[in-house]
Image 1 (tube, rainbow, N blue to C red):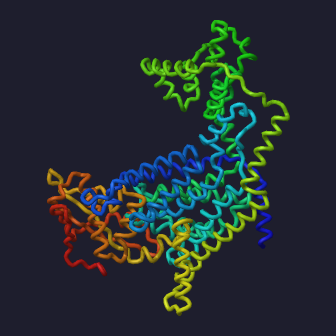
Image 2 (tube, rainbow, N blue to C red):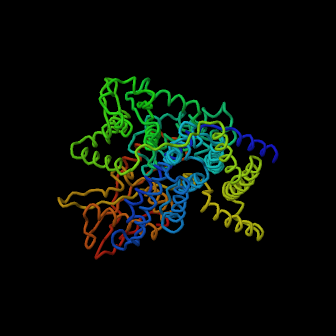
Image 3 (spheres, rainbow, N blue to C red):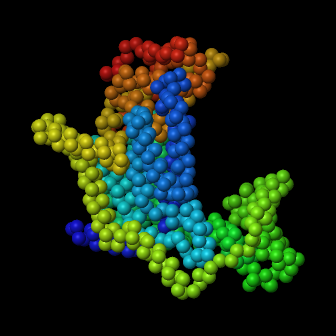
Length: 636
């Protein structure tokens, strides 16, 4: 078995595929991280302050968030990609390990982000759609036509993160779902979509009221999650699995208020898009003929770098470049420009024969590339144009020698020397294919062991209750397993995926909200939980998780409820202008149903349930008191 697996890994290392999907995966992952950092910055007082705005967290946290955001932006655009991925990964560890994010404000997808960012430290995602690719081309402008740096990667760069991050997650989650009765009844997708704390503003009742459709969806998810790990590597199953997965997570994104989780899962499906689809997409967006022809001096390094840069960003193929020596005679209009000026300044000619020189040529390039047209329009404004033109001339005139001749690399001997140097350097640092295959195999064995430790212990042993009456040996094994999981959870993102199961929804029959009196004496809900009982935007993602998964559960703990009521009322009370030195808010409650059997119109029935005043939240001189008379809620 080991030899067969090693053979597959060796074969995968030798198979080269385009890096396009990997580039889109990096961009999606980076943008999602940027969003999360922005979300954390907006809610930094609610998440990190012991008492929002009153007892504040250290200001250094905001500085670290800014640094994290910069690293995530660099990862998105692919600027020093591996370093940016490492810094981003380090910040995930820092904030998940040493702030309330690790328990109270768990986003539900944090470990997925940890694992994905760790993979990006090692994956060659900079080979597509990155500034690193451009930077390497610019360091060797004479090699521009030789496709340096490489634009292909090993197919394992796609399969390994898919198997580890998606395959293991799905399989582990499916194991946990077997213990939930409503999942076994085929209602796993239906029940959360009827809970006001979990739903978005989109009314999915027409679909939720189709019992058989919901059961088909529920059982299909079981089959999909159990089978993904074993079939995603086969070409014939890849597109069907991708379509099902995209529909599944798009449904989560639009119907529930945990959209970061849904988007995070969708990002991984960039790795499943067939390579032919990327080629077809490129063909579809490319223009049939260029909109602008640029004449440049082929002997100038500055002009060569300009050509490389524009080609890198010209995704539509709107710009055509022609060398001055060979093509100047084809354009009689150029005779009005002296040869010296043509050698020093690129000249752009549009389809109508209009010509543009210097900074005006660059403005036309930006306009014709279309998605950069806004920049070109701004540069064309009178005052800005004069500043840009002055800056352009200073750069041009500051060079004592305007025409730079470069070495001739067109000879076969030079090409062979360069190729051999690149090949020998790569082999020296990474080893042969067989050596790399052995290293990857050992790493995968370790990862498999760590994942099995989590799945078997928490998905099987714990779910079946084998750990409730443990012997001394079993307790020892449990402690060892927990210690291993502590490491794998923190650094590798391996964690039990027992989310939204029976132990969470069973007895979850109460919702809570806060209201206050505005200046006109009208009762209003805090912009947190609204009249329907829905948690409203922007309190989604990890804020929703804090309230619906930690503060309010089937077993409501008074101390825990008080802690998060204080955070919510202090944060949103300050936001809406409530004076916390002397304020009284009303605590409301409504009852809902969370059955394990299908019921028609359950989403609507839960929303229209009436609110009942059960207590008050009293703020006096910056201190909160929760006044709740005896309420018939078990263990409240």
